[in-house]
Length: 220
Image: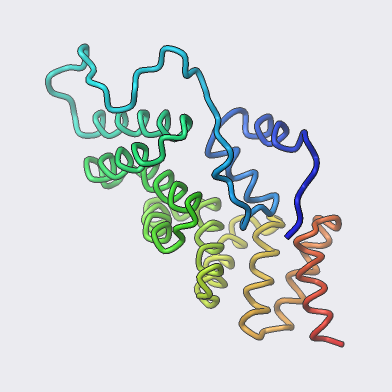
């Protein structure tokens, strides 16, 4: 395990994601922090004067469409997540998903919450539900693949990683994770081919170099 000492890297993630919190988390994962503890990170966004998630809204109409209720609930979930209130955010995501089963965003965020907590078993059904609603969601597919690999479900990790590869063939973080999945399945030829692709895209990636070293140790 290596610790990145670049003090500005997190600020660059925020800039690249245009301040979108789930986007920032995805940038962290793409960078290779798939096993780091992100629980120490807490972002406050416009917290001054923000109502507590779950507080009654006196101006809310007496009756609203289920889709509107779900979207309002999800907005509160995002606010709770940004404030570090993960239990509240999780409950709101679950409620929004029940109210509007075809609304994909609660599935994404609920899976992210479980992932952040390292509850990889719990994250999987949420990411799978998210992908059922949007099979082009590369970030969800990538995190699903990582969850499978960390649970040693290597064939499922490979399958999820290959689907992401079809969507984003030059996503280095996915190629690294996919190569390692092939390595752990004993498929060294496939692992070598894919890690070479990753190194061609990001030759300075420490994670790619680590997989490369592990493969070379087997090849020698």
